[in-house]
Length: 404
Image (cartoon, rainbow, N blue to C red):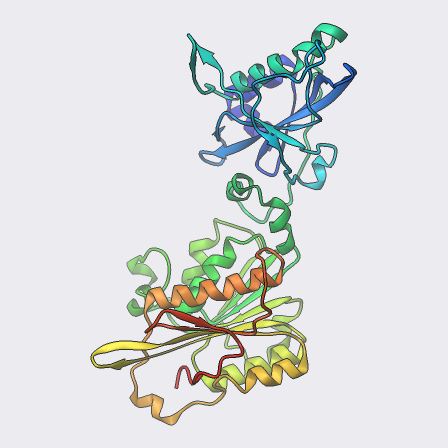
């Protein structure tokens, strides 16, 4: 990454050429060896950290005029804190490669041009400005500069993505996304809800994703799955269509034309969490037995829609199964594990936005379990009623006969 960004961004190259200790980590520009003085006018060394906004795979720009600082409060030689820095104390999680950079605060100091506050033209102008303000007293007192010409090329960043994950750095949630790094996820079924689950999990930094489906991709699938439709995709297998759409996005993606049943232990070896997105009770029953025998926690989704008074009504369901045997038995009692013979005469109604919502609830629940989202209620089942837009938890006594 170091050489790529330096060679494609003139402002960063100028920082390197001037002697700054430039490095990169987790979507941030890191400038080490920044001198400053503390309250006792002792020399201290800190670091600047600034968000990188990737325009494409090689070009970057600034997020804003603010900057993070790894260090204590910087002082002037008069023994007073340097004024007009704004910001305040904060925390920012970088990777293990930058364990020496402990961000403690942020600064906000816009430059003035003819008395008018403006932004910074580029990274070079931004770093130069903050060095003048923060390092000036140390440079004067100790005859020191930040121009150490030190190369801080940390890195192979062990990312599963083929593009830089700037969403994580912009949101400052790298310490939370690390919770997914060892997960191997199985998505069983790539119909309407499964396709959306697949889309969301592809964009989550899990170690590996295995997707299974044996059905072809037809026109009706395009109306309840994310993304584009190209005519040459029709009649291809769903795993082929969705696999080709996302193969340029990340590594660790395996799509297999396979009907998962009790004989598929090899396919699921190493899986740490699964999403079951099938619409047949007998298929679901076999998959659940396999997952529970392998001690793989999972989420099963379902949707039951019908027409009443000319309009659609019904529920969508998200059921979490842990590895606890009692909870598994309780969960199995709540969901359809057989095929209703009357279903052959019924229309299987699925709507794109409800598939997406079902997938959203499933993925949010998974991320709660991994400590990404707050979890105040240990819920094993969520039911969303379309008619009154209400959500009921696992203790609900409402009718749960979805898909029947």
